[in-house]
Image 1: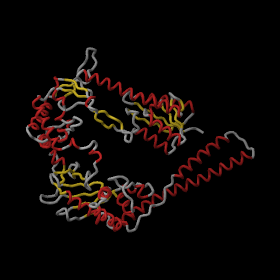
Image 2: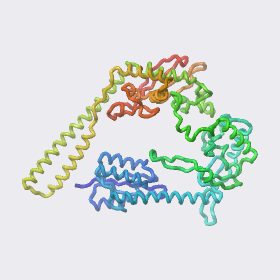
Image 3: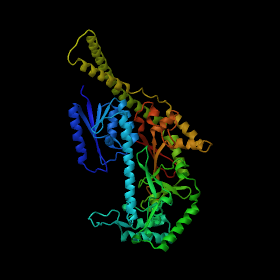
Image 4: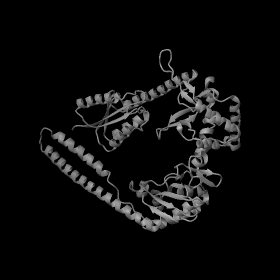
Length: 568
């Protein structure tokens, strides 16, 4: 039987040559010709590191492997697939479970021994590469040059060394941006707040870093990380490096920053890059320290903000219908568009009371969004769509069972012929092919769609009763748990500017059907603030529950509500 083969190729940032993929592909095809394998697919990832599996070609390869779409994977070397020891072992385990061979030109057919040795070698390669990179950056900083990145107020200086090679990390002052930096320091030292400074610069059309609008956080930065315009020591001629280190999150593959101890910081003096005089810097630093002391931020335990749970039903779920930005606290009891109130770049300057908005949303969930007639319509549409999918799946399953029965009859006939002493050229090959097809059909049938989920006919009434109980529980001893369940019902709330002066803003609520039906079936959200997963609700892993229903609330005030269902 001819094996179905796929080829995986990749080149990364340490080998930026587009031709590298074509070279790998050519060599792998030559191997396929020698082995007599059939090429069915080529997967490729260009300019992507092997330290992460979040690569389109690699993920497509895994998906096809789960579907048993091929019999062997061919690559130039094991490190083309991954340089991470854990990922290499995981890939090998998945391919082995699917009965798929892994062959590389450098190592041959991969076994457990290759996974252990090559995985360790690749991990050591990445560590060695990181150490060499840091050593090079440390030498660049020692020479008074930047180790990477370009902060506001400076330009990259194009220079050549005596050998004609480009000098990396050289910087020069951008006078136009430097004047803005000096103005920010002068205004802040004189008593202006970062919010007021950001709104002033945005109103004048002064572009911020990378051409974006100014934000108060861009100006004040983060005290512990030393970020922000007012905390950048390069403005007083001090180049600070190694404040942070970056680690890859195994769950997401993304880099996450971690602060380094001050003892590990590297500081070099670069007086030619100074923009702010010492007196202005000290006045600004003194005011920053006073603000931080008044906020009591230093008294909070480590990781306080990361562990802090939402205190309100709609925290992090309210957005401006004008600019799409987040709604945040404006004073103690009011919410408003942060882009309008802190940056001055949005026309939605209205505010809403937090408690009035929460009452409106809870009322919508309790009384209108899951009204019995709407639920009945949803259940009917869901059942119709599910039945259509079931019919298609049933027809496919019937065809598979029919073909499986035919394959089993052919196998039985061949086995009887062999038992009676019949021999013919190619008989064993026919037997192997039929056995492989039988196994493939059995796998496809094992993945048959499960039975239709049962939805309670009075789901709307059940839902309203449960939400009413949750609303009361918000003020009880289990208030935090109830709050998280209610939050799971709300995907997004948009506050649009009022149509005319004196009118209330228009509120658009998007609720997740999955979470709503899940609550109606007596299931809690899978995690704080998240709706129940489609599989948990339907018991079938269907994507039908991933849609949402939108309702629009327009009224003369926030306590009067008219709801209009809008198509998903």
